[in-house]
Image 1 (spheres, rainbow, N blue to C red):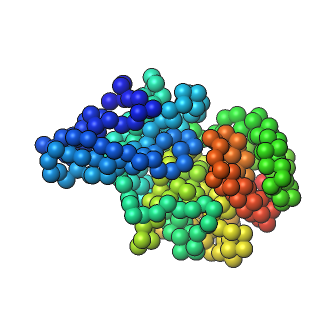
Image 2 (cartoon, rainbow, N blue to C red):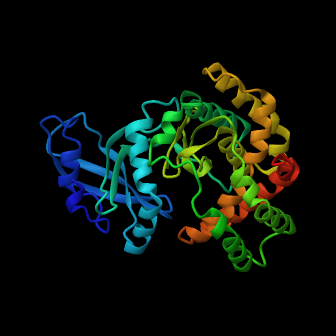
Image 3 (cartoon, rainbow, N blue to C red):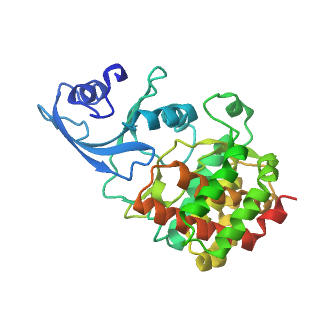
Length: 349
């Protein structure tokens, strides 16, 4: 289906007709319209309204996600493997874990062109989390349960390390991060606080130690588990999207990233330990063994550096937008306060 796919055009009626063959019955796709959703910093997401030539149980609304139409950016993302990872997550790992994800109608990736196409359940009226506004204690608690549901089923299983698409390292980070930190300071020179400068300098100083640090308890992690990547239903349930960064890593890194980026500093300080304990209790309930609270808390403190990495590197590598600038600066401030308050540098020793 991807052989004739043009990312500058997006999905066509013919493509949807083929992708929905198992659910549309005798009906055929007669037409469709699309409306952009999200910011499209790495890929393009659109909401499709599908018209059929007769009544059918097939979905009228879908979310389509596909490669950036810019060929240079598409090549860059292809080298990183992000598109392939997301497709393979939905195909191979989503059925295995206990985190809520959208239903998938099609998940395709072309190794020849680097194109991909996801057709996902439209979860409207669920609302996207707002990274800038932050979240309530209740939403943060739900996130802890979803993160635990991702981590626990894959905890300590070496077979996930053997999957070439599920990376367990951070290639090139040691070389590129100091340069990106310099560029970050130049770009936002008049906007960043002394706290951000202090935490950023500490991060670069301890970068090699952090990259060498590896918890003895590894699992499948999201690595971009934040409010902008979750959909929250009216009844409070949470669905997690954007799996292009999934990897093998330390579970509490996801926890530290969500709490550090999604909660204002005073709120995080008040709720933090209880929420991390909720995560720890939940993974034990789901079958994880031999992982003490002391180990979890230390991994959480070390994992908090991931927030600084994402605040700096993603800001400089993603497509730049006004909202993106505000978001990355907000994240940098929150994560800076987090790593300094947790003394995350000491946790690495």
